[in-house]
Image (tube, rainbow, N blue to C red; front, top):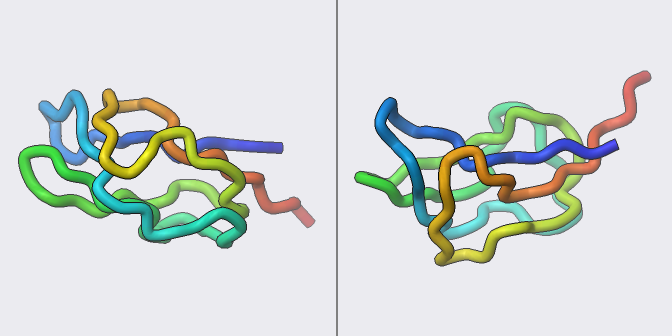
Length: 81
């Protein structure tokens, strides 16, 4: 089962941002609160994961500008015990 880490609005009027750098790589484990990317938009922000699992795939390249709510990273969700 998969979920996605999306470009979150870092402030109320944010509509898009640039993925400056990913802080995780394919196969890395993430949990809620894990820093996953540095985002530039009217400032420099750190995007945090809201899901738990392993990084499966990147949908946006570093340096790309995308709209808020665009899927950036696919995450293979952790199995529930």
